[in-house]
Length: 424
Ligand code: CAO
Image (cartoon, rainbow, N blue to C red; front, side, top):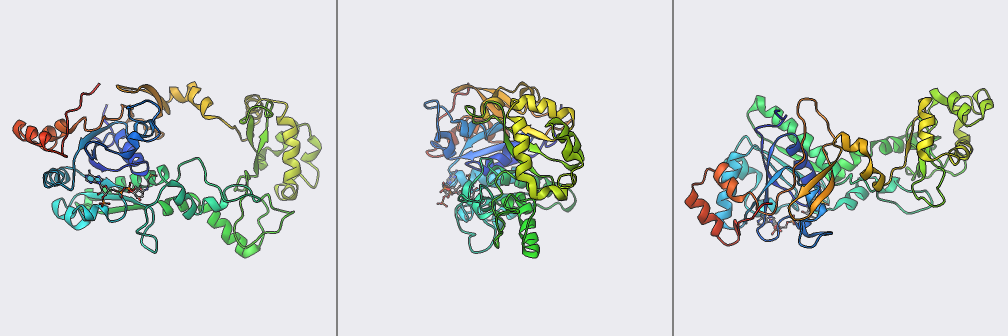
């Protein structure tokens, strides 16, 4: 079966998480992703958080599926020669080096554009142009600078980062969309272009509801769906809202049966207005259906804490899955708090390819996340991440068209191809 990005060649200069997430997605859509790494060490994540001695870490393997790896010292003249040829052959260069690193390597936008005017050059940086444009940035810095941390957590605690990697993987997603759009535009202009996804911007894009709330607060001084209302006065900035839904439908995390010993025996419960009568029936408070302090969404706002406390008395009598089964009969929006262990064992996620088992020659079988975007005519199959330099020879022969003698010369050069890799 063909794939959406068949024929697209990506020169993948990415490392750590943000850039590799982007190029892994493009690979799942069928692009030929050629990951360029330094001989000997490669992407630093190969050796980070290792759980199997001497094997590529899960950090690396789970972000670099379906790619090929070539080792290249791009600061060495021979390596530069190879890189220039690769630039001429590829459609997209993706990088997430520290600001200025590509220029220092001798590959500015102008130089790349001169070598291949059709090339799309896509970058992740921590910040866009401005006071912090030269800063190196990791995930949690982006979460803090993008507005997420100040609005996450509880009102009486410090700012908090979230476990979802919205700074890294979130920015990788944004960049992938930018690349596909640039390739689409190239069909009519014939030109490549620069694509930038700044981590601060991407986090803010995902946090836009909080910028909405800042303006509501500026105008009205109050936000009635926030847990601070009606007991605690609002300040000048959007406060941390705990587990409140942040939308027009109030929600909260409630205890379920077993919460005393199981840290994840909880359910997210939403008091969606259209199903309010059903909620009242399920929890045994039918008098609330018509009571003037509970009958409408607006009337309920000052009583949300008491309402959720009453609903919780009911959820505490059910496991999170029992509660789900009962509530879903009435279309009451809710969701179990799933642990990573439960997700790893969830057979429905395996069946859809959202969680996949992958085999690897040095680490054996492991679980990974498959392509979360499903397409009917471009099915993603997850193949293992490459060993360091595994495809160097293959790429020199097939992509660059080197003859056997030139491949041998290249492979022997110190700091270039490096030793031949035996693939499992
Ligand atoms: N051959 C020769 N040199 C190479 C090379 C290769 N194949 N691959 C990388 N290098 C060099 C770079 O040219 C750079 O050299 P200079 O500093 O001399 O210009 C050097 O390796 C290190 O690159 P770096 O500064 O990007 O790496 P770092 O580990 O110091 O910083 C990070 C990592 C992530 C903080 C930084 O890359 C960054 O801020 N990136 C942009 C934001 C980003 O993507 N952050 C998310 C990271 S995931 O949490």
